[in-house]
Image (cartoon, rainbow, N blue to C red; front, side, top):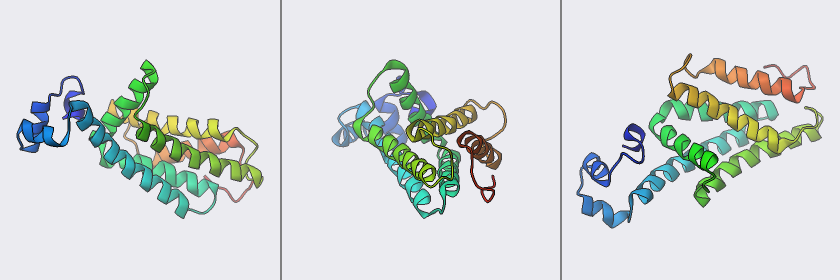
Length: 185
């Protein structure tokens, strides 16, 4: 309901009707519409975080780890567009309005970006990429992926797909100055 109608246009009555339960029953579990929204958002954000971190941990080498991160995020977007609408709305709201994010949502976002930053710092330490600000690079990668998702939500241009993953990897690879001929994008 939040994805279809937006937060402000969605009433608790709408949610209860969609769930096939009474409004009073819904209030037994959630004291407010905001709590329903937050619960839906956090449940999916936890899944996305776990899948991203797991895929990165399983991958070998910095470029494969980056690929895993990008692919998981874009695949999750394709499979969970309703969630991505409310997630991106919340993310944009907190950025544009200076509104603080829910503590756990903020922690999940930072945790994945921190994993990216650590991976990039390690690659720089091994001389596989040039010395960069790993935190800024991780934030930039996250922003690029959100941009691809937003474009898809607005239905501008072509669909998010493998070509988008390759584009991100190529762009990041060029930015960090890949040092080995073995790293092929």
